[in-house]
Image (cartoon, rainbow, N blue to C red; front, side):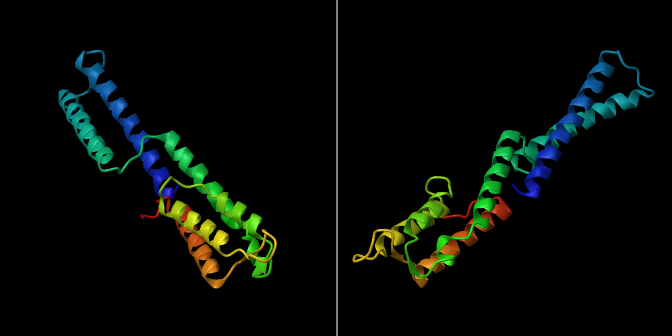
Length: 173
């Protein structure tokens, strides 16, 4: 969740509050329960209500404002979890290039969850396939070769996850 999405949510609810207030005052003045100092004020209130409705609809249509607080909260939590996972150092950084870190590396990559079919989900699957392909046939199953190609792809994967956590936008396929 980015700062701009939080601002969009705040602006949306502020505009809704202003609209509701204006509509209530306008309706109460139309039925005569509220007397305004000038008769032209009632007409101006009516026009302001219409303008607020139009601006709100346009802003919502073009996604300038957000009304779904549950989704915003979910996005914030999702990004926080991914950011925390990024803080963990991948297992191969602490071990030799050729070592028994296969289970830890698989667990590290699988800990990241992404939308089905997203670019990051595909990158994670590709890394898991590389781990399977780079295991040593003559050594225990826990060993695999974290070669430069694997390390490069893992770094790209981590950078893309970091970009998502900073922007809130899933990388395009």
